Image 1 (cartoon, rainbow, N blue to C red):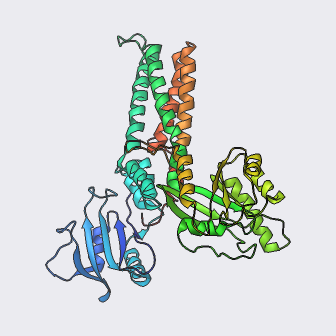
Image 2: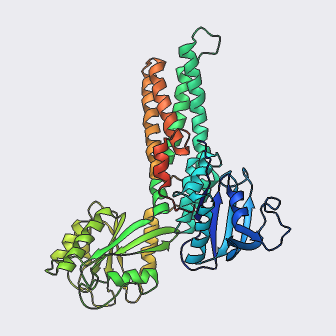
Image 3: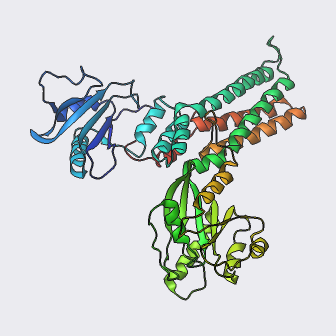
Length: 459
């Protein structure tokens, strides 16, 4: 795709800050800079000083708009492989807005979401999985998720996909020769050779698919919902895990009436932890809505932390909530162990069906470390990923891998049955195409638009 216009956007977050950056990319970047920028030193030429910060002012009809540092980077040695100008001005809403408006008036247009990264992809600077990794780096919640995104940006996943596609490409070439030019003196491809390649490819794709469950958690966070009856200590637990008073805690049942959501880092795992309204029968309309939201949160949760007040006997409401957890990954907490105990171990064994049970006192901050260790164990199964792991974190990538895996299995079945090569060739092509959708080699323009709409405007 040929790109012949120039785009601009604010590349820094909105709000008050020390510095704001307006980024320009495209063939007219230098002309726009020369139109609106006046260096303090009259002898400085922007073109002759690439990749250097030049001190000066942004000018609008001889009126100084702001004091800035401007840098010019000559394509193709830039992120977008186009000429790029970056204007470092004073942070704040007014300054960056005025400069951006002046840039637009001088010949640029406002960039679409993710258009700088999209141009980097279209111009061959990065592939599609690397482009998506840039957004993952921006939205990383922990060092572990940042490291995984960084590996993808470096091309670790891309290299593995390319390695697999290269084998498929060579096999497809051999199949084509065997089908279209049977009289040629080329060495005849054997079913055994193709089967050996397919089985190796299938195993490698399967390993990538298996990495997704952990990868998704590292990328998006483990949605963890705290549930229980009113006044069992859910908000106290949230505050203890966060190590701050985020939720209001009172002795009045039903204090929490809406969903409270926060991120916390536990052992490198980004935990998207949700404190819910206490589940009970109520006539209060507002509280009833909160209870319904709590039940919906259980359905969508990756992990449920069910809290019981161990100083009170189990009730029908407790048992009903426990039934919601039958098919969910969950931890049962016996809270308020600082008080006299009313729930026996026999009661717990009867209704928890072998789920992990931890005794804590949220008020006294006891047992919190044990909860964190249990969460790490459930996610990692005792094994943290190694630095050399390639982890799939994107649902789109997983979907493409699953299609490729299915096609490999179909091709293996076809070859095992001694079916004609042209039938197996179709499955080879589907696998090759599906893997190409990950790196962008075979992706449609509509899908590109959908992917980059998720980006921030200045990236």
